[in-house]
Image 1 (tube, rainbow, N blue to C red):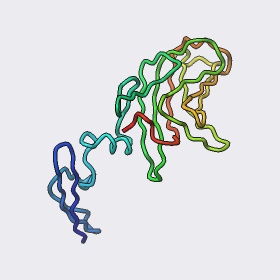
Image 2: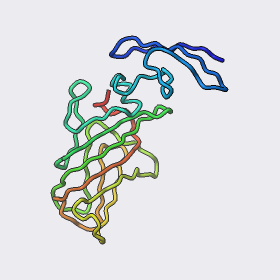
Image 3: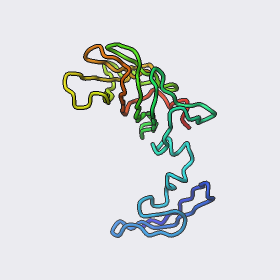
Image 4: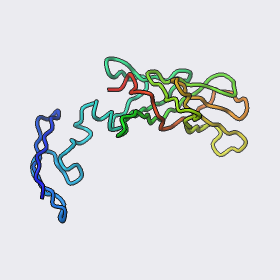
Length: 187
């Protein structure tokens, strides 16, 4: 049986957990914010620092809202209804970004690029990172398909249309993509 003590400082002050692990019977412990699921090693997400919550993928960032020294994640080339970004760091130290964007594009074209400020999509040799596109004006209508990708070494999400379409349409994009580094607006 191993005995340990774990301490962490949260916005509520010092928290302490003391416990023991028995391979045959699990663990027992007292004090702090410890529970069976966190074993006293991490505070709940609502008590985490912005930096820790970001690296673990618990912090949401919203289009047009200022973070980290007054910098806001924004999407260019569309009228945004809602955009949410969740950057996180993998165990290998690489940064990734989950996102969901809904808005209205304008113009006519067979390709369209949106720009998310403060990010740089990873350059992966001979590989585009796919994103999902939903044309909210033609749900269930056949004959019009769209594909999307994160363009490497840019902050651009490309939407590729099967045919030339008016872009004064509402569409949504979502994905989980590799980044070259942590977004500039993230804690």
